[in-house]
Amino acid sequence: MEHSLIISYQNNVIFTSDSHWLHPLFELNDFLQKKQLSAKELFLRDKVAGKAAACMMAYLGITKCHIELISKRAVPVFEAAGIAYSYDCMVEHIDCRTEYLIGDDMSVDDAWLFLRKRAGRVEGLPVKIENVSFSVDARVVLKDLDLELSAGEQLVIHGANGVGKTTLLKAMLGLVKPVCGTITIGDYQVRSKNWMRNRMHTAYVHQENIKNTFPVSAGEVVSIGLAGISMPASEILYNVELAMRRTGCFNLFKRSYHSLSGGEKQRVSLARCLCQHAKVLLFDEPTSFLDQEGKDDLIVLLKELCRNEAPTMIMVSHDMAWIEQLAWEKKELKGGCLC
Image (cartoon, rainbow, N blue to C red; front, side):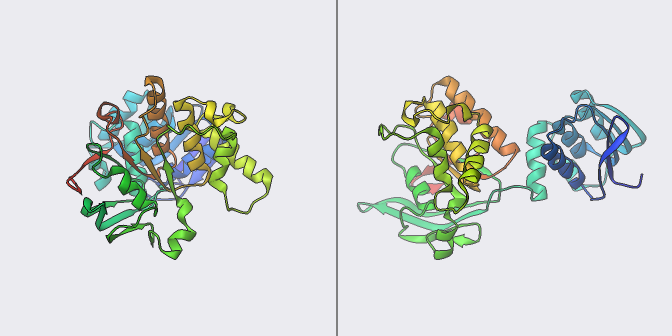
C-alpha cells in the first residue's frame, strides 16, 4: 500500500494520508468534519492498527476496514464496535508505548480524548498557579496554593462554602490580585499587559442567578464573546449562529435572555465561550440553579466539548453526585490549599 491510510467510498479513493503514528486518523476526522461526511459508508485501509487505532476508528464510526498488520489487542475493540475487519498479518502486540496506555476500562470516547491530548491536538492552554495567597479582611483564603494543568485537561475543585473556590476563579480571571504568587495561562502571566491583550482566551461561566431584566436577547449575549473584535456584522452573525448551533440553542436566538430557564442560559453562556474561541473555561457552580434535565444536558455539552475542542476546563462545584458523572480529576480546596 503506497499510503499509510486510504479511504474509499463506492470504490473511489476520497482521502489518503502519508503521516505516521495515529496522525492519519486525526487528519481523517478533520476531513470528515470539513466535508460533513459520515464514516459509515466508507472503507478504510491502514498499514498498522493496534488498540489505539482501533479505538479511534470506532470513535469515527468506521464500519469496514482492512489492516495490513493488526495487533490482537485491536480485535476486541473492532468486535465490540461491530466493525467488519480483515487483515494480512496478526501479531500479539505492536511495539508502541501508546498501546499500553489505553486501559481496558477506558471507553472509546475517553481513549479519543486521551490520544488527542497525547498528539497535542487540543485547543486548551496550560495553566500554572504558583505560591498564590489571598486574604479577605485579614482572613487567609488561599495559602501558597499550587496547581498545574496541561493543555486540554479538566479539573473539578470542590470544598465547603467560603473556602475560596470562587476567589480562585476570580484570580485566574485577573479580577482580584493575589497577595503573592503568580498565575500563568498559556505564555502570559495573568494581569500582565500581554495577558490583557489575550484575555479573551479565558472565559467564565457563572452561576445563573442574575435577576436583572435588562432587555437583551440570547443572540446578543452570545455576541458579547466577540466584543472589541473588529469584523463585519455578517461574520459576527455567522460566528454567533455557529456557536449557538454547537450548543443546541440557536432556537433561542431572538428570545429574551432573562426569560430563559437555567439550562437554556447555560447553553447560551457556553455558546458565548465558543464564540470568543476561549481556550480556558472556568465554571462557577454551574448546576446550582439547574433542574435534573438541565444537569443532564450540561453533562452532554461538557463531554462534547472534551471530544471536540478540548479546551482546558476548571470547575468549582459542591454537587458531588453530579460531578462524579464527569470523570474529571478532582481536588479539594481546604485550608487554603488544594489536596
